[in-house]
Image 1 (cartoon, rainbow, N blue to C red):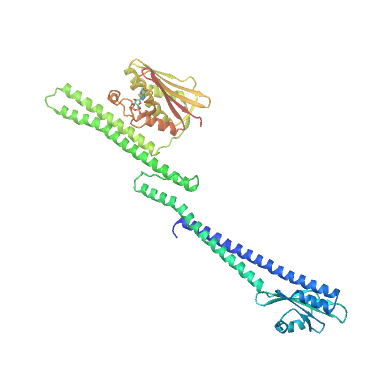
Image 2 (image 1 turned 30 degrees about the vertical axis):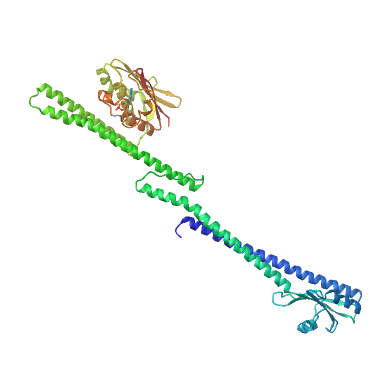
Length: 456
Ligand code: ADP
């Protein structure tokens, strides 16, 4: 019995079956006792009735009448005198007198009583009703009730109980099979589905079940399969994109290194090619560094350790770090931080985030434009924003820019030198801080990246 469904159904079957036997036994005994008690009461009532009539008018005639009343029935009556001799009897044969002779002679009860009550084995149940008319005329009215009809009734009742017992057993067996099937089918499907998943086949489709534990388990497995499928295709796309990203600089590297090796080149020309090789190597280095960052974030092998630190000196340090690059491009970078409040964040990670955003603002802006780094408090929240007046992002592309390796215009990537990983890292880092990042952008008008951090 290895299937859980069979186990459950068997337990259910056994419990109901035992309950049924117990209840039926109880019912059977109850009905039987009631019926037998009824029979005893009837016999006692009849006997008492005859005795009362006899006491009222003790004559031969009355005795005759009483005997006559019980003729041809299931009951017999005998009337005895003080010596125990039978004055009259309704029994046709003398067999009854002979069989119960000693019993009749030795009656001593002073109240009406059932003196033979064993209805199961004895052919009669017997009751004795003492009468006393005067000192001379005493004795017993003895009643005999044939037990055949009682036994017949009991046999009949037993037969009914057996039939209903068998019917209930059959119904229970049907319920047992149906129940084990109903429970088994979805479980077997789920087992097959998980086996498929473990073999790496994520194309699983489980039917939607009712909202019970089994249904929830089934939809969890389905969700797991869908997620795994999604991750699988995402991983494939990601790997393809990385391969593509790496192959471009590698093509340049091998191509330009061959060109640089030509003997007929002038020093100036060779330097030019070597410079390109250097730039491409730097691009690959940056890409690999970003990929490493990303993989560390994905594995959550880093932790953000948030501390309180003053925001203004923090931002001024970053400003000084990037200002030379802005000057080279003849761009203006403004830092607005009117209130020097305490920032609750991981300073190293937050610096990485802001540097990335400032780097993008620089890359995707034209010379002589303006970029602004702004920090302020809004109630309990801290807002950090980087605004540029650069090329902007088309509305239909804004939704994708935080995805790994996504770039708005791939052809322009060489011109701007991006790898499409920066914003993915930024988003992961901001979310690791419990914060959010939003972007608003107008093509040709510029972009604003806004980070919202909660106090705790
Ligand atoms: P990249 O290394 O290409 O800059 P990011 O993940 O940082 O990668 O950015 C993804 C894409 O989003 C970029 O390729 C660029 O097209 C767009 N983008 C990011 N920042 C800006 C910005 N300030 N202005 C315009 N476009 C931007």
